[in-house]
Length: 254
Image (cartoon, rainbow, N blue to C red; front, top):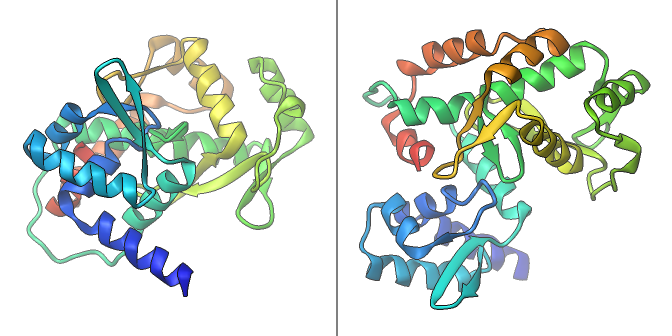
């Protein structure tokens, strides 16, 4: 019975449009002040304060105090994972559609899903790693690193043997809510995103969940994985520009 109560309580908190917008703006794992979250949700600071108190009480958020400022973040990766999964559920609604804005298109192309890479680029990289035999499907929605994969990651500077497995092993299959395909999550996904940013392949936006591919990154993605980042970006924009429901825009743009 307590599990059912947890489910209904969390569902109630997430169902509110303002609260869901604030939650989705925190899925990149960063902490943000109440003012930024209020802006993301399109509500007043006073209303945001009430919503944040409910999300804290419900266990979806944590808060850190620095001087006079309070910074909110998701209570953990499990919350981010639940939000991404929920966003991917549901039939295609028959609603009037309009093109995505530039910021939403950037998020669809490449974004942070808590602490790993998501979006069209994240899925393309995952599919390339599987196609080249560097990863293969394991049990319980896991990815397993092959011997060839360990060598490939080592060339990047990532020692997979040193990564401590999580509850779902070294790499988890995370369903991408915009692409409806899996990308790499778990400890390997975290280390990979961090390394690609450190080495200048990718740049994380300070203002949103968006991730930008640098010219160096575009060249190395083509060389090492056969991925044309520009083609992936254009294909993502073309695919979603005319077939994304208005209702999904707000969550994606937050």
